[in-house]
Image (cartoon, rainbow over all chains, first blue to last red; front, side, top):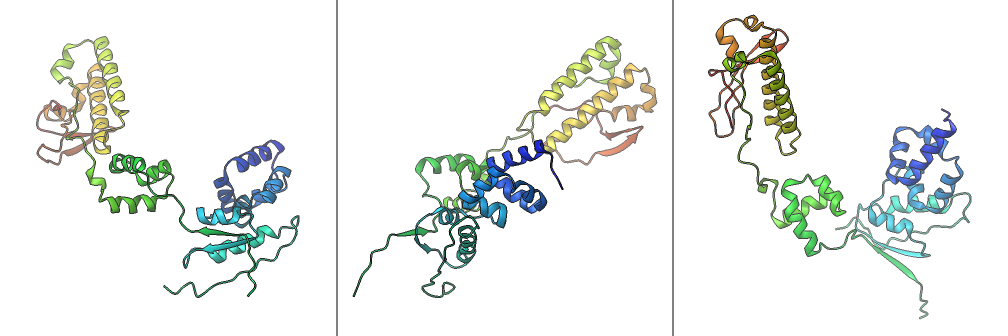
Length: 119
Length: 184
């Protein structure tokens, strides 16, 4: 599918203004995501906004606490979350976002203090 | 033992701050009458959080103050009154009635059941006046069928009867005992 310039401009404008739309677009029409991701403004946002990257490229809707984690730029982060709260998923998204081609590659190390599934 | 101080960011799971008294007051006022999704968006919380808070406060949707009954403010014309008017008057009456119905139908507090009744009534009145204007009221058959053009509105406090419906032409009429629609 190829979009006209005007359609592509409108799509990019909507994507950049509405984060939920990125999720919807990825779910309903992935070919449009590929079209939009070629736009310079979208690429810039993808590189700088981990939430936007996660929504548009990975198609993951994050909870507020996961969003805080992804937005954090700290070198060392402790996630004090209970079982089944999405630690691994967030970490995977974090690793994917941190290791985009234009970023300096970073190793993401995960330490688990104990079996988190024990109540 | 060598201790090295690292700058570590701790991210807790608690998403939203505690409920403030103002938020709780808003919640108490709006919860009974507002859908959870709308209230969640309004207060910046999830629908589940809204539901949990309601349970915690002991609030239910049943606490809403519902109107006692639907009040029908219309005075429909009887067939006899309709026959006394000339066609221009009838046109004016019909127009006014439709205007009143339209205004009432836009009332946001109108319940779906009452809205449907109102629309049936509006349809019936229009059919009656149209038939008289065409001079073809005899098409409707016997006197009993003519009475069927008027729908009795049933309310919460009224006796429950199931009206018999008939189809005539393209319209469906509800048979009632009395020819005049009853006020609320």
